[in-house]
Length: 198
Image 1 (cartoon, helix red, strand yellow):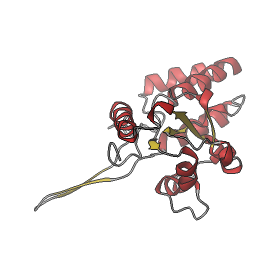
Image 2 (cartoon, rainbow, N blue to C red):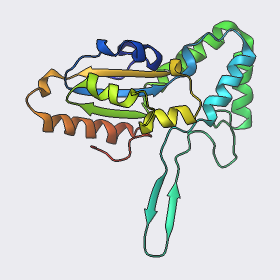
Image 3 (cartoon, helix red, strand yellow):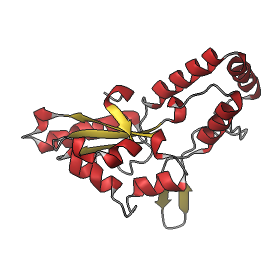
């Protein structure tokens, strides 16, 4: 379903949007800075720190007569305010030791994290026409909420992957496409999806 095998970077799609099929299906967006070379330990640690502090979610607001609650999802900062993938001191020291040991360990870690990133896309949508819908998100004026969030988080377009699944079976049944989108959103809970099934 959502794998790096059926996705390319936002940087690529901006130049080759016409390659996206004009067919119904689901599409997904993933943030993964882990495909870049990781030979240098210090560069990798800086990448981990940045990744740990990126929050690709929208604020949710709950309002009643007497209260207003604003909720933001956090990815890694726990109650101890750890900014290294949310790891405690011992786990962080263990990972750092593993990464310092060899280039092979750093390559394995990056491959592991890249695969892990695809388990939970930060956005999932459906479209009657994949090409048209993805183009709407990428339009040049930058008004798409997803693009605004990516830019405000200072994420490089070569770290954002967009993939899609053509679903020809839905060609004549648009309502069931909505159901499959909602099921996917409910199970994976992508951070930038504001409302399931929408």
